[in-house]
Amino acid sequence: MPCHVSVENQLPEDLHRAMGAFIDEHPQWDQYRLVQAAIAGFLFQQGCKERAVVQHYLSGLFRKQALTPNGLHS
Image 1: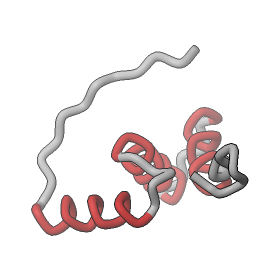
Image 2: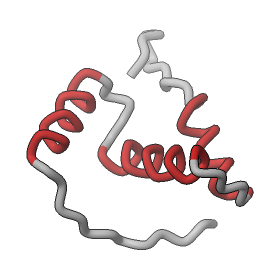
Image 3: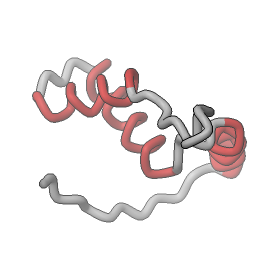
């Protein structure tokens, strides 16, 4: 099981609002998934080839929405 590290960061207010709006419109995402995808995407685009980073990057791109019992996406 991968270990997790807690990170505290200050965001510009406009980025925070945009993040909140995105999460409101995409309930399958949360702030943790969004930040992980952003960091992995940035590192990958900057040439990082570390296997774990690439896996996080691809997971963020291709993660499917879960289906609820009534067949709708959650």
